[in-house]
Amino acid sequence: MKWQDCDVSPMKLQVEQELKQLVHEIEDSLLSMNNENQCVLGKLDQIKQRLSSIEATAASFYLYCYLSPYTDMYLELSQTLRHLSHRRHGALIVIQRMDSLDQWVYRGTQIDAAVSSTLLESIFYPGSPLHDGAVLIQTNSIVSAGNVLPLSENRLADANLGTRHRAALGLSERSDALILVVSEETGQARFAYQGRLYPLPTG
Image 1 (cartoon, one colour):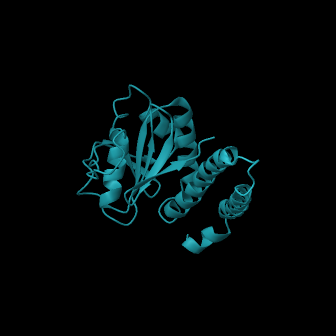
Image 2 (cartoon, rainbow, N blue to C red; image 1 turned 90 degrees about the vertical axis):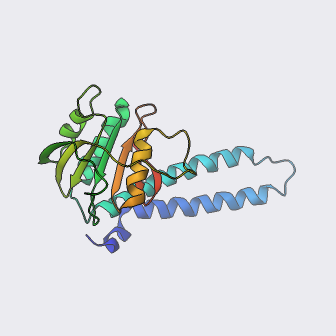
């Protein structure tokens, strides 16, 4: 799938519409500043919440575009993230793209099975022998599990990030791989790409 195919996606259109609406609300807030009887703090809080929602929708759109040329399993992966997030089961899933990962991923247990939500959820079930490591996906196959990734060396990264998030960032700083990560503390799902973390909706 080419990047241009994403341009007509419903998610992209939704992001565009919501951004235009947000611009309108910001303009209204600017006008309200000239009225001493109106306080814009409530509107600013609403704008902040709307922006977070738009960011999550945009992240889903870009995730689909980044993954589509390399795997057909976007829906399976999305379902996996939703389930793991709701149960607060920590997870780390690497989807290989163009770059070889041999020098960065310390291989764990060979799996060689088709990608499925059921299998991924069982791997990351708390107490599973492989749940602490990363799963490596190439095309539509789970190649291995229990893999070890390099940690981020970025000193500007959030000091509160756990090991999974630092590992996701670390690999994304060294390759074009896309890494999905779920926090077991909060259940929040994110993806790491090119040294940055982006939130994903799981509702």
